[in-house]
Length: 244
Image 1 (cartoon, one colour):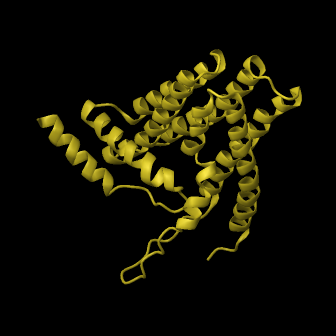
Image 2: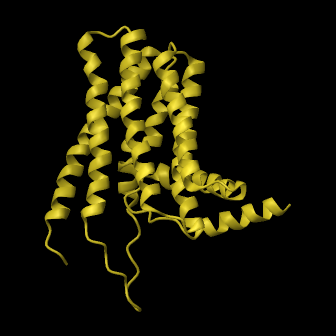
């Protein structure tokens, strides 16, 4: 009963300590963050540290990635890989929320979180390349370059966005009587769905059908390349703008 009470209190506190929804896709806003909130509250009750939650996230993610690289594609594998990646992503949201709840945010914790994220993105597309080479009947061996191109675009989006956020000056806190900030754009939140890691993970539900999976993977690759170009222009303009 006591644990249940602490869990409920933690969930309520986490609802009021969410990061801004600006620049976040609908999936992360309405699915992954709420799931991470529940996991963060459970981890708080269990006495886990944010870094331990990060390692749990890594464990789920890399288990799914290893299965993708080693096992022959099938419908059971499709469900297992997706579940491992999706749960890992939810725990990836939980570690930061737990750190804010426990007021234990640290440079080391942020570093660990970003290193795991970068390793996960890099390894996932490497696993797709291995699966393509071992199990798929591709139209040409040239298509083995596809996961490498996807890996390049995904890592650049991750690193570019992270670095831009670090380099941009922090906005000044609004004083008393200042107008409320504009609500986040729903159109932007929808447009970001194809490059949301959680949405991309859904493509692995198609692993049971070689042609469907290949088509879905090509679609997400094209979306990443198109949005990468838009992001690079946007980020450079923001960093080039004179200080307000």
